[in-house]
Length: 355
Ligand code: UD1
Ligand code: UDP
Image (cartoon, protein in one colour):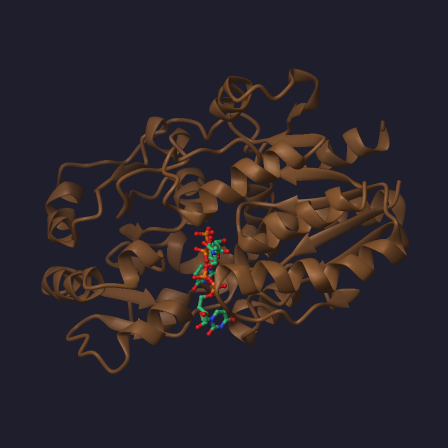
């Protein structure tokens, strides 16, 4: 089995690192080639993850960078084609729902190469989000769909995807968390920032619907009010940083994006998390940390039924309710969802070995 893994963004690396490790072990480094598209390129959004998660230097760097959706997608298509044409793998593996995912799946399909989609079948049913289109198209182009939650199966069957293409393997992002749990638990990042463990609200916001318009200013103002009641620490995504400019954050502690180990250390010791990230809704479910999602919908309803995630909606004024909602007690002692157990990538490797 010869594979090409295509990653492009911060969460892609978190999802694929265990799959890359497991397939390198089974098929050797030459049978498990890594392409990084360069959709994310700052050291703090890219290299730090490749290093901390043990992926190392990718075999191919495409350097596509930022741009409109069309520019970014087109650059991946154009630059990936010669790489895939030369490698001629048995399967191209793509994770998640970013522009690099869609472009890589389309490129592989046009070259008549098989595609495997990791984290398949999630649906927000909100087609105004580019990620939703990326998910649907990638799923329909893929011959192997790796699922991590039961509703993914229902979503795919409802779209007419044949059952024989589906493989319920579990959550590879949780594999990464499990593999590095000892390291991040020993890290003490909150203490280093002068924060008492269990006392603070950790924030990440980067969705265009929130940060590309006036809602971002309203969110920052609401966070300022929360900061009067509990410390608020906000590692700022580069998209959000660009929009914030020099805005006055008041008592909110704004920091640059932090590496995986520091982020998981902060996440595991937070009183609660406010986010619009997909991955963070899942990690908080595994860690049993209350999560408030500043969106109208989620493609990850399993995080809500697990009892950790509360969908606040897109209105930033609701942020000020968080201290009171925490007082009501939203902790959960439910087990994590099925197969969020640290072994999903090994299941993927087992399936690939049997192909
Ligand atoms: C992308 C994904 C989103 C995912 C997120 C994870 C798409 C459509 N969106 O959003 O689904 O949740 O990644 O973080 O694929 N920038 C930098 N340095 C970087 C990367 C980006 O400064 O290393 C800035 C640029 O100004 C760029 C902007 O961030 O224009 C947005 O980057 P882009 O990759 O287009 O989308 P994200 O918002 O990161
Ligand atoms: N993350 C990180 N540092 C940060 C913010 C997030 O390491 O400053 C990690 C987080 O733990 C998760 C992943 O990045 O593993 C989520 O990425 P992001 O929120 O950018 O993307 P999404 O999941 O929304 O696609």
